[in-house]
Length: 463
Image (cartoon, rainbow, N blue to C red; front, side, top):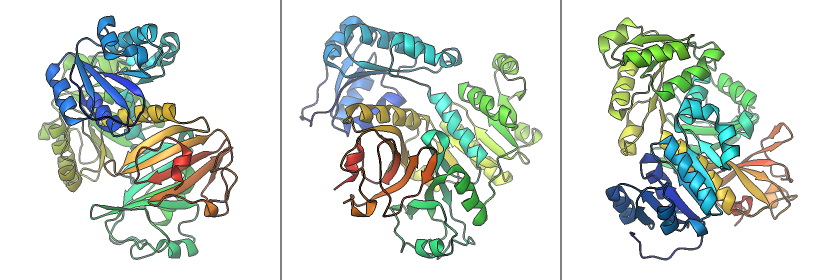
């Protein structure tokens, strides 16, 4: 067993089985949050790489083996997370863990057959969560195609509240205006600006903040008010009518399943003839083209110049990036780029790739939200967590379950941490953009945005 030297403040005892993209991302993020982490993988080089990089322990072996789990400390573990490439192995790891230890278990399950049975599997196997990266990524892509002017759409309160991120064009009415002036003119009614990126710097803006061209702006609002605001400032808020998807894998299938019922025409270009036949049966409403989606002539022939959105979902990041850049050059399509493993975020952010989706981060966010909720006290619970602006900003939705130091006190009287914004209160179906006189009461869902990290309790917002 590989072991690191330093002692950490006590968190949860977590075993992660599988050191691929998601396992490595979870290790990176959870190791920052004072948890004791043990990794299991058959590949000793992957284990050694991660134990050298982070303050974690590692064990080479089969994560579904009783003996290996015992050696990893399953009897004292709080949580086992199985994120290997095999759905069956992940479910078996969790089953063994539930029988041997007294811990919660999370499985990554990607096959559509299992995914459709996730509620049944979760109940019968006693799992805390079943997570599907391809389905989660497809859901995020679909949200962006419903509102194509947005770079990012993050959803809270079961879709009733949204944080929308967009790039400010040079000729927009917000340019050179302060937030206070926009409020007086009622342009920004019922919305709250929560974060702005300018030249790589992140600001949690106050009323005196003045917008500039090319700012990347995030604001929070109810679904209806967000679209009204975007219309007021000159953005188109209609969903796309058509999309071209390159690659016919699981993500393409899940995405088409969500878009077709919305009346969006779907065309999928896939190289494998057998997969094309499968997709034709699974998606009778979609057009399936058998061909090389990286072939410029084929793309032109299939109408890339006229399609309203373009989503490359090949398994190769470099192909996805090049396809997006090509679509940008010859069409006005809304483009969404899926990136699985490339780490050059600085370079990627300088390319004109439209909205960028990282499935490994989407998966990790859902698991981290669960981990923080499990670690937290009983007076609040994390419902949703998103990392924004390349993980430099967190947006967290708390369910306030009991009275505490933050309840029944006007927000203006709270001593809040700096670089933090209390953005929204969702109460009995009503979205409240809070003023200083508003209060939080038990039963509320509260959304905060902060450049701090590691919050697991609503009381963490206080100094």
